Length: 282
Image (cartoon, rainbow, N blue to C red; front, side, top):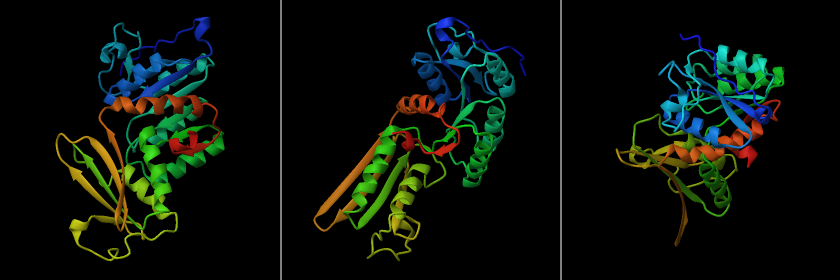
């Protein structure tokens, strides 16, 4: 473990900037976040934490024109301590793993910093534990199943369409095998199932595996495709006799998540509790 003090700018023009710590900075999404934060107004990168590429300058890891003089450190507590001494507003972005999320947010809370959690497959019991932690500490945290604004807009459009169609199925595709159905598909199915509608009445009892997986008790089926070269895509098909209404959202690059992340940083600093879902800020 390298005990290098993270770089913190103390110039007067940056005193009011939100100090952002990225936990999981060496990952693809972490590197994208580093670039997005350094370009965003009113915030600055104050720490890069990861167990990979320890000691390397995060700016060079991100192929930026100039080094940021911020080494990657495998010690979140050390970075939090350095930021807390500056008495600046700080936000920790967690891109790590479901098994470490609770401890990471607990550490951030202990230093008076709010958190953004974007960790796939986080369990609901972990979210509940985080909610109780944040409420007790009156500290803000956003748990975001997705940071894609396009994905959220698709979910909202699907809710609106569900009141006008009695048949709906979800088809998703990914290039690599993951836990299926994905969080996006589950979220859409849950949203539709909570509206009191009953879909696909003529087919709801079909148990043929090729017909896809039924989520919930309202007949929403999900089909998952895994083929190399496919974009990350989610489509929702609504229909009634003589009409098909299709909603589709594709993700081709992790850069599309950055506008949602920057929005989350600006909003989470005002929270005093846990909020689930970026859509609460739109």
